Length: 357
Ligand code: DAH
Image (cartoon, rainbow, N blue to C red; front, side, top):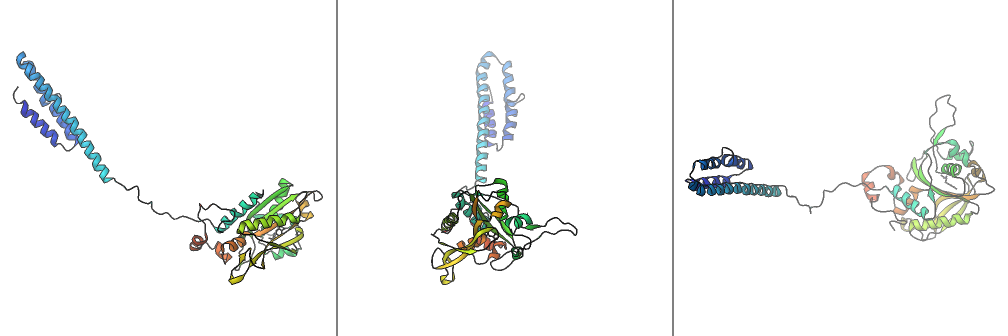
């Protein structure tokens, strides 16, 4: 059959020169489609003599297969080239460090609260909570602080506003965590071993006082609890917290909710203008404590002839300042980012019982 070689060359050239898949499809239709150039040639076979057909038939079939295969190969080649192109254009370096993101820090008060909780948890204490807006019953009366008692005035209490003629007893912002003692006794009775960390409020403001600050209360009740247990628990606590052996000194003192009451000092040195806990011959007042007053037990619906126990209360911010060398309490709550970055703790710094030592 004449012209097959030219036909073959013309299609293979066109296919070879195609630069996109769409063009290949057009070539396929134009060559091999129903009215395609090669298909029309095939039709001519019918008009041929058997001898001619014997030669032209296989030649045409071979041409058809060859063109088909060229289209398929070219298609695959174009797809590969396109992929290479994309891989080059969309390349990214997965070894590059990620963009830095600003990270917050854990506030020293949160950190120290966690540390305190961890140490007392080790000694079998659980955590109790109470409301920050208290009735004056829980904040004062139940703690053996009657209306006329000077402690009410001393505490610079914030009272909630009452409309004229509203004679309900006033609510206060709790001035200490001691009311949680009463709430816990009422709900869970004795024996018990709890701490109650949380916010407290007093109208006071200077280098060591802010209107809102933090305390942790402790309460242990049982049938055979004494001041000796209190002393052991506190020495154990301070030694774990400061990471050095800390001696305590008990001084007789008065708090309406305990009898006897004691202020506790911890051993320290003031040499060189800095306070160092657990060394030297000086003492630093650190907390109030005592044996729970029978009237307080009664207010908490506990039988004082059967149970007795000790209680204590200390400032969380104060021991945070001591441990981490923070000079001014007001900065704790000033929300100054530079301060927070400097004194804050990384979120993955798991609190240890004596972190930072
Ligand atoms: N509530 C007292 C205060 O805020 C601290 C305190 C003293 C708590 C003696 C106690 C305690 O439980 O026994 O000043």
